[in-house]
Image 1 (cartoon, helix red, strand yellow):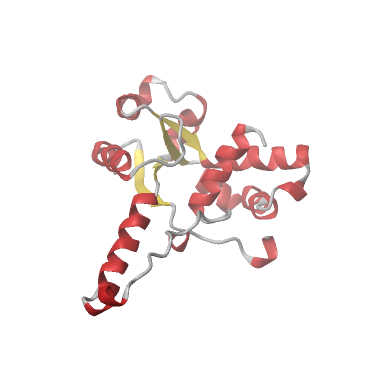
Image 2 (cartoon, rainbow, N blue to C red):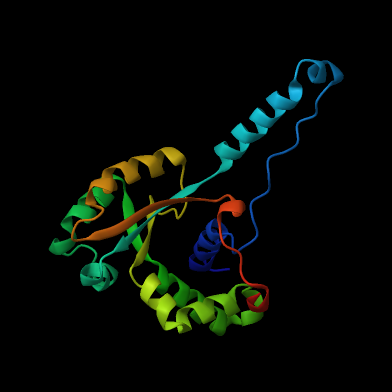
Length: 190
């Protein structure tokens, strides 16, 4: 599978659209542990393990006036406030609509039977309302990775937060790879 498609699958996993990562292993509890409230400690261990495995992604909704410019010329001087922060964090913009369109094109080129999210993705990019939403939505890659550790996401989020509500950024959000936090494809589009 080409690297661009593997990267897109990582993004779909983040959205809960692809197979989720394996859950944390179950830690056995001894009888002695049970007597000392091990159930509580076990839950804490599992929670800690899960949070250690979670990866994060920052997304921006860029205003209508600048979204197309961000898609075609992200280094344009008009986007300098965003570009400076992204450079500091070794981050880059990736337009969600363009990523979806690329996935559909690759599926059609290589055979849609190998792309489990083809129907849903194709329906998404064909819907004018959804297109308008995704054309101004950008995932941020850090050091070439679509999902990254919480510390990297938190730092990037903190630096971008002052731009929200200004002329460039309408919305800032942080997403994680926990499938319970992400949408699933409707049954008729699987």
